[in-house]
Image 1 (cartoon, rainbow, N blue to C red):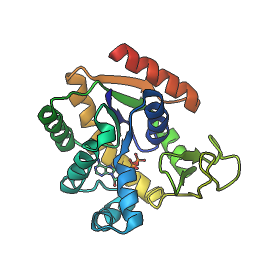
Image 2: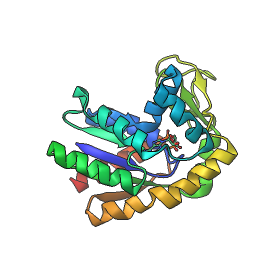
Image 3: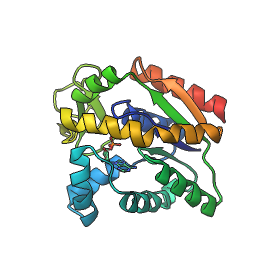
Length: 217
Ligand code: ADP
């Protein structure tokens, strides 16, 4: 299966992508995680991305599209993948379509996680990520780790993202409305879009997502 996950920052894309990818036995490809890994390793790509990310802005397409394609060409993605955070604007959506056409493959569905804006802000403020694996995501109130500051899944140290500040979150929401939301209509026109409410417990949302994807394919 080849799936794209969309939704505002804080919608729970990372959390859901991790669980869905496990259930569907496909790799979880998160451009945010790929950027953070590059930043952690101090690569030129990471250095370029960091300024944009900390400000809450999108990283330029020239950098992002190449990185996403490289990842999709790795052998573990040959039979499917779940894209989280890519595409994030119409240019990226069109580049993805061209790439898929070149490879002779198609998307099976686009899952849109719908969350009210005040909830998004609450989720981001309490979010904590694992240093070892960006898809191990916790929330201090909604999904607390068993031991404070320690990842339940791998024992890694939990941290707060540098772009989870109030100012960066405001910019990220603006970027989402102006640049990312248009791809929802783009995929709706292709008959690929399924929208689910992303409120409720993590497991409830995962179950809803699996059900919606089954009906769609
Ligand atoms: P969230 O979905 O919570 O905003 P991500 O981890 O997906 O978080 O992304 C964090 C940041 O990484 C974005 O605000 C942006 O700066 C950058 N980024 C991630 N994916 C893309 C993309 N497809 N295009 C441009 N920038 C991106």
